[in-house]
Length: 283
Image (cartoon, rainbow, N blue to C red; front, side):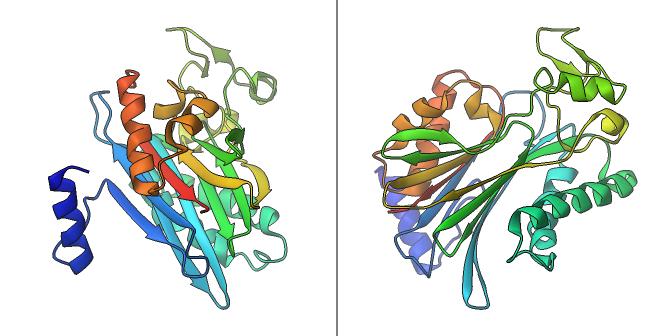
């Protein structure tokens, strides 16, 4: 570790300064071997950073929730910022969150998107993808996503994707059934109505008739074989496979340094997009 990094860590430990806004870490109180770290890098796309990260442990009565999310905005900083502040609150307000978690998450995603569309005058045009992971008492994780930010878990060194990339070609039939179309013109990337390169997202009021905000939801149980989970925006997945990402950080024990290393590897592979990454290590 470089001297500057050691000094920064010492300052953080004694409270002299806060960690930089683009990086951070945390630890479970219920299961002290579970840690998380995140790191963000602004891309070279000629616009301000549009990614937002949420990562924290939260105590609710006698339970502990690990709340993790990547929000990747397009033509918008206001919408992913709104999601960072409101989506988990909306999920946890659902009365059946504990008894029907998957249904509660789906309903909260719909309610949040409806509110964003109603606030379009204030939040502006554009939209945001999202991938969220809720770790319940250290043994069960519920992942939901719209768009192409992705969640991957590592078990015994093997990568398993928990989210689904919502690509326009994949959902062409559903888009066309709503009266929309999928086109690669201009360029060579499939887009909804020739504009948006994802088939599901929050916001995007002008495309909403042809665009879904319904999340895919997956449940995974944490066992002795589970090593870590990665949540990341497409700035990583455009240049790296799931297994390559897992291999890159498998032996990095510090979650924040693992997230930073993954981002640096994506940059070395010429990723030009904004990059946001959360790593949750299970011991």
